[in-house]
Length: 362
Image (cartoon, rainbow, N blue to C red; front, top):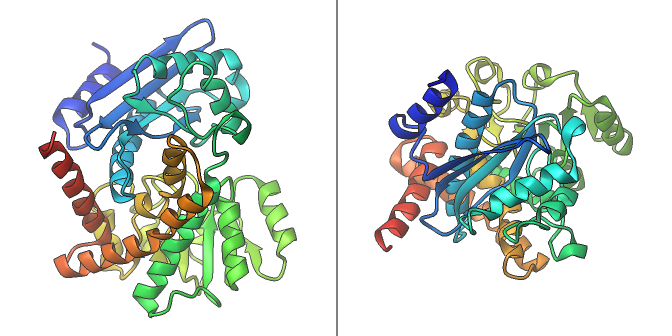
């Protein structure tokens, strides 16, 4: 038995990070596809979650990411009030080098083989055009283009939901939901981050951004020279004096033993998944007086959109659902205060209760 397999089995069957219903390892040598599909729970309904296309250093890292992301989707979908469980898929490789229609079609066949237990959509490294290709082999595909019966890019509502989470955080901490005059730092101005900038600028916030892609930063600063500035990297961003809100909007693990002690912001509210690098970070944030808006709660706008696509997409209906992230976030802060626990733990309790109640009625 290889170390990779042993690690997967141990995680699934023996660790607190396990409990998944199903993990599928997919390979199509003709197209070069190597993928992992993880289904964490179908208690609330078919598992729903995106497909990440990323050049993982090892297969074990890819499996671990799929497991973590799938679990997060169970909680996210539960907190968003959706009738869906949690699942996630990862395709191993650099999409700029190996993405082909043949690879995506092969992936679609693997998703279809699950018979609707898992519904896929976009995530880091995959786009609407990719889902259009996947859908040619799999009807359980969302995030497609309007021309192909879909709702299009879900980043719009993801950013809107994070913005609502920021407003709720401001209401809880400062007694006013307005972000006018506040300084917000955004790490990652890609599909979601650059739209979030627009919401903040429109309300009169000051925005500080960073991204590994200099051209993306340059475009945004050029569009908003009076309200947006840039810094070299995330390590610099989190130390900016006078920062009110820090928004991690790239990959996960942004909040760890190195970054939390350095934060100057009073609030963390961003679009990235799995921001807490390990258990205990949520307590470290609370001990420092930093209000953490749970990532899977505030970034649920996108999954609200792709879930709606399955039933005939209506943007206004979805935007109204995403706007409720404001109230959901406030309810989590209230539960955290009542129970004397960090907001992340309060959100987990609420989500776990809904999932447990669904399992009990099966």
